[in-house]
Image (cartoon, rainbow, N blue to C red; front, side, top):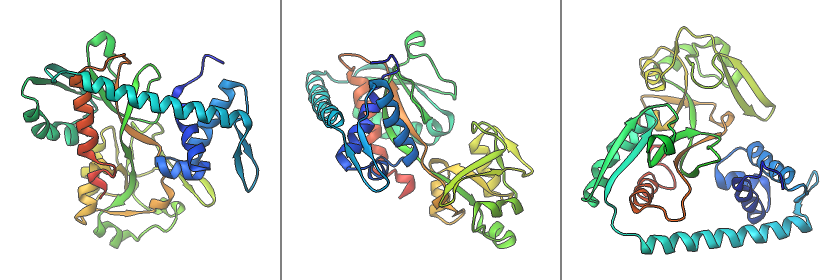
Amino acid sequence: MSQSFNYRHLFYFWVVAKEGGIARAAERLDMAVQTISAQVRELEKSLGAHLLNRTTRYLSLTEIGASVAEHCARMLDEAGAAEKLVGSLSSEARGTLRVSASVAFGTLHVAPALAEFLPRHPELKIDLSITDRWVNLAEEGYDVAIHVTGDPQPNLVARPLAPVRRKLCATPDYFRRKGIPQTPADLVAHNCLDYTRSGEPGRWRFTGPEGEIAVPVNGPLHVDDDEALSQAVLGGLGVGLLPTFIIGQALQNGRLQAVLSEYIPVERHVYAMYLPTRHLPSKVRVFIDFMVAHIGDEPYWDR
């Protein structure tokens, strides 16, 4: 087994085996098919064995794949049992919980939720740091880091809180003036506003029936903060590609209109990350459990 072995790959493979295919697994996990396929191939590479029989029409488990899937199921069952055991032995949450949260998500969704969470745990205090910097949990003494990423750090336990769905959007008035784009290629005629910390500034990538499409972003505004970008979009300046955890309410009340949603895959999630430990502190467990329940299986900003 190579050193690149990653237990997240096992989980994705187990979902593929359980759902009976990569496409159904991707739908279950709300992730791109290409992402799930790549994760399974990485696992096969790490193990040095083929786990799936792939044809143009069918996908089935190899003999080794069936054995690995059985082991995955047992591991997940044992992990769930262990989590319940530790939870039953944990004492009331108390002390200070140090949380680092990314600026937009922390401001819009973590901080407001504390008004409901903290009264339930009167012996607990929270030290909340709002920053887009990736903190070092061990060296800086943080208990939990909440970040948006498509690739959680492998040395941390990463619990997904919500998928990050992005929407290409503008105000209804803007679309009345400029027209509604029917394909990504139509965006060349629009004021596309650029978020410069997206990982690929100056370019938007879409996935459609014709494959991947790259569109240059040549609008009059380039900004390094997605909340500021959302305000420019709300002001009618142009079209932005923004996460729904920022613009969900504006979409719900009609201030913004989304287009071309079928071309935009889910590639990232919001994760609550913490250091691996045999006994998770109660203050960490209850906080993350609360955030998962508070956000919901379908995030409240997407309903």
